[in-house]
Length: 247
Image 1: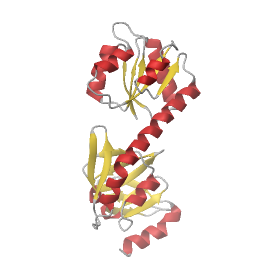
Image 2 (image 1 turned 90 degrees about the horizontal axis):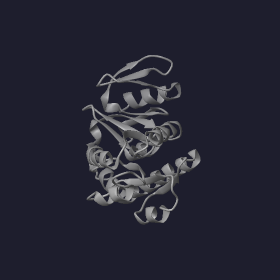
Image 3 (image 1 turned 90 degrees about the vertical axis):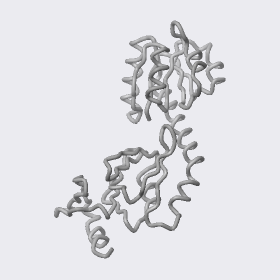
Image 4 (image 1 turned 45 degrees about the vertical axis):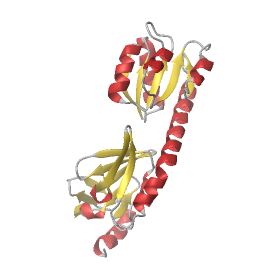
């Protein structure tokens, strides 16, 4: 999840970034900002999904920063040394309100709230669209992938392989593109046409149409049309051979 940290105290920024790296590895810190002005520019330029925002800052506080924006299309977790702002924070729809020094368990719980909210929002808005796309009667429909500024439509036949990354899936296309989908590889496997896609092992789903070469081994490995090498689990080898030669 792409994030920006905004706090006028450099030590607080460094501490928060270290705790996030240690306990929330799927939070990608795009930028750390030392002022509200820097934060506004970063929000406009980088379009984060989540902003960790200090309240008390010189010149412009966290609430004023939010008020200055035309739209707030990201989630907010406030970080502050003062607890008297809690009610106001929740009035502006903050996901959570963390008091400094930030407790690691509270931080993890707050990040999980954001994940749950975003997953629910994605599901509500896009599941019907996904179902429509993937039941269109074509072997190769388009896959709708939510992005920061809308929805990406990817031709399923262009997908080379999909890689598991915790609760996310990274989709690689023959054009060199990478898309991050907030669904597990198991869920993605159910969405893609089983006639053409094969799970080579726990972390990889491959489009059989893009296999260039099979390299022998205990399980062996596949070389795809772009040169990517994908390991084949020993338990999957016979099934893979059956799929390749009986298609």
